[in-house]
Image (cartoon, rainbow, N blue to C red; front, side, top):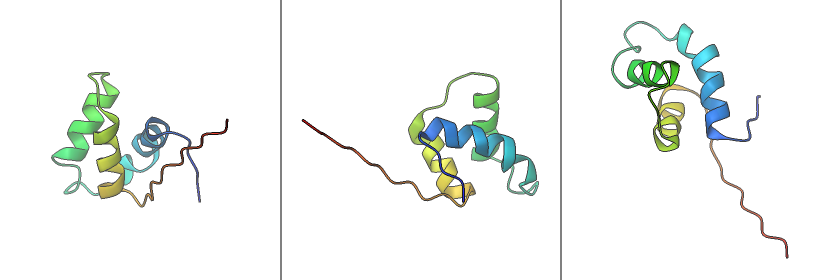
Length: 69
């Protein structure tokens, strides 16, 4: 198990470790455009990153917000 503190951190890891091993038929459409936009610094939103992680990786994403007065 690997833990990340932010969506961009997890996405960066996914790009470097999971994306290269995806089968060619999966590397079409959303994954490849996300990879291209991220790699060439064209901009990619956290919402889009989250969608890619959920659809093309085995990620469970939870949010923790803590207020301590």
